[in-house]
Each structure stands twice: as C-alpha cells, then as structure tokens.
Image 1 (tube, one colour):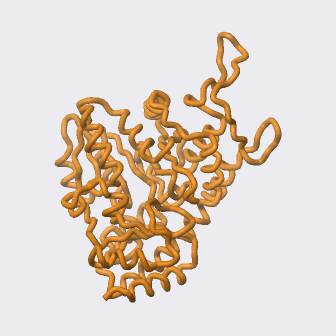
Image 2: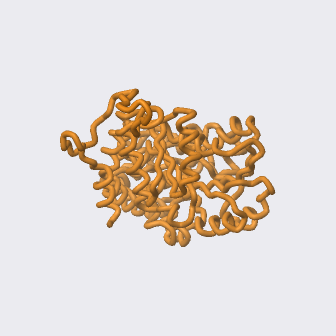
Image 3: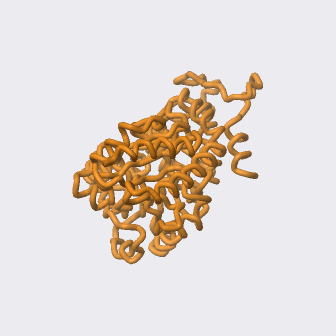
Length: 380
C-alpha cells in the first residue's frame, strides 16, 4: 500500500460505537472496570488512552513498525528513550545533534552516569574508534539540525550490529514519508512530532517507534513511569495534521529543491546546506536512503549582521523557532535552536554566525524566492 493511502487509513479510524469517521477524543483520566479480577485495556490515561492509542498506532504504521509511543514534546520522547539506558552506559552521538539533545546529554544524563562521545558519523573510522567496552548505542540525526549533515544509516547500522549496539535515529527532518530508518536496520526512531508529522504549528509532541517487542517494553516502562505522555486533544490534532503529511512533504520538498538551487547562484550566499544539491557532500548517500533532500535547508549570508537584514526584511516566512509547518519558517540557529551551545561548540558543529535555517512551507516557491531576492538586495 502506498504511504499516502496508509496515512489516511491509519489516521481515520472510525468509532465503533457511533460510526464517527474521526476518532473520538476520550477526555477521561480513568476507566470503569467491570471485572474485579481482570481489568480492561485502559485503566488510567497516563498508562493508556483510546485516543492516544489510535495516534500511537498511526505513527508506528507510518514508520513500518508495530510499537509507537507519543509524548508531550519531542524532547520528552528523546529523553525517555535515552533514559532506557543505565548508569555506566556509554553512547556515541552525532556531533551535529540538535541543541536540545545536546543539553540533555551534557547537563542531565551525565549526572546519572550515562556518558557519551560526540563523533562526526560521516567518519566511520572515528565511529569505530569511539566504541568503548560499555558503549550501548549510536545516536543518529540525519539530516542534522541545522546544517543538514547526512549520516550513512546502513553503514552505521552495520558497525552497530557488528558490535552488538543499538541504533537510534532522529527522523524529524525527513518524516516517514521521505525516509524510513527502521527499514534500513535502525532499532528505534524518534520524532519531534511538533514538526512535519503535525505540520500546522499548533501542538508540541514527540514520538518514539520500534519494531522490537523487548525495546518497546523498555520504552513503555519509562513512558508510563515518567508520565510525559501526549494529551488526548493533542493526539486528535496530531491525527488530523498527519492526514495531509504526504501531500505537504511533496510540495515542501519540491519547493526546497528549487529554492536551494536558486540560493547557490546568489552572491550574498556563501554556503547552502541542502542534501538534495549535487554539490552537497552527502547528496549521494541521501538519495540512496531517502526519497529527496527534504523540506529544510540552511544558507549562510556571511555574518550575523547580514542574517539580521534577511530576517527583518523577508515578508512571507515567519521568523521563529521550530520548523515543519505549512507556513515557511526562517530561524537563526545561533540564538534559537542551538542557543545552548557556546560559540566554540557552535563553530565545531558548523553553525556559523551568518547561518539561517529555512523550513519551506507549502507557499508558491517563486513567491518565496522573490521575497528572499528583495531581502538580499538590502545586504551591502
């Protein structure tokens, strides 16, 4: 079945009682048990809720998996997966990881004895060299936020399997429509479902997905124990947002390709980060493991002052944090998504002072190009 058909079938689950096409919002914290000795599937909404179950089944199905778990934010999902590890464990993590993930590793998990090493995952020799006797997993984010660095998923999976390590992949930037890490051998996929899965900048949510029952049990234990689950109204909104995921990703990624090609030709732009460009070092790997370059790109206009000019003079994009909405969103990573990193850490991650991230929405790409053009004209 085509992904677009799967999306509709899994997000449109009729109510068995009334026949309502859309899943009902079950606003109940607790559920009556009719049998003293045997409880039903649902007893308390932290542990499970009928609305959340439909949404969790949907995100799992889109990744080609059986087990899905939804959380109150993307960082709640990532943190909960990382909390399945124990004191004394060691993780290998992409050096280009999202700022929030960097913060939880550097300032929270290390206090509980879960150690990590940041590695450029494009350097397979460096990955092998970073493996320690207590290494338990390799954490991938591809393409990465915000410089769109590409990790060769099958190559990392091969190393992990050779050393009996788990692999975790943040698939937020691509969505399951464009890239399916589990089919490439990854063990656990995480998402900030706030972004493309929801697609409308109206909720914050996170997801963790796996095919493996033992891993699913570990993830569920932490989800239930910590309790950072997604509220049922937001589950319903996520289901509604996901219905258009396929068509949104087609439009946005096609537009991103056109805009990236245009940006490469502009004298004000010193660097374009987009794996759909043949000039990008990760281009060939990206097209082997994903359908296209995705809907997010970054470009460098040479300085913070120039970045400010672009941000203040574009008319169509929203200048804000986040990404993945139907509206185009322009962000400044040094002060937004990666503000947790100091100047040295940002430089090591390729986040230069003139770097802007551009999450392409579903507007007409020619209008977006014209808007960028008039903003660039104000750069001296």
